[in-house]
Amino acid sequence: MYTTPEQFIAATKANLENQFASLTALNKKAFEGLEQIFALNVSAAKATIEESTATAKQLIGAKDPQEFLALTAAQAKPSAEKALAYGRHLASITTTTQAEFTKAVEAHIAETNSKVVALIDEVTKNAPAGSEQAVTALKSVIGNINAGYEQLSKTSKQAIQTLEENLANATQQFTQAAEKTTTRAKK
Image (cartoon, rainbow, N blue to C red):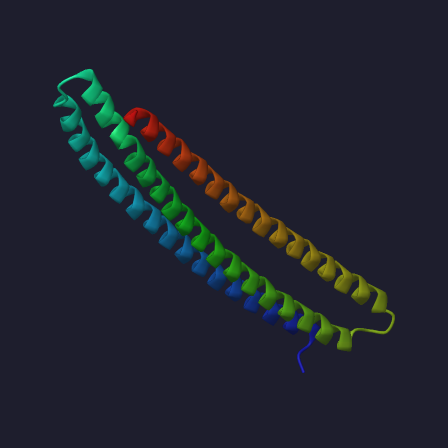
């Protein structure tokens, strides 16, 4: 059977290795998300340049102010739709990356928590008589930390849900405004 210092050394080493592995996995997920955002931005920039050039050529070729306004109005809805599609894609990348982060962090915390509880249980078996209050206090602290994490996790998920709902509402309002603008321009 291990002595208490050996148990703590082994637990500390295992915890550090686990944290390093988790940090590496989180960094990998972060870079994957950044790569996707970068690719999206490059693609959007290329498309915007090409479309702007084509639109400018059309506007330069307008024969009178009415045709110019009609061409401008005709571009409003497609431009709004493209902006919305970009926003949706960006939100999708962000939401997916955040979900992967949350899942990885929750798994890491659950694993660490179970190891800490197992270590405390093992140490408790070898604890001298009269240390029950200290052990109870330690378990209470761990329970409070876990409750705090669960509350933080719940609050974070609610904030993300609210952000997604706000993005959906903004998208809907933006689409409606673009449609109204296009309708007015056609009249």
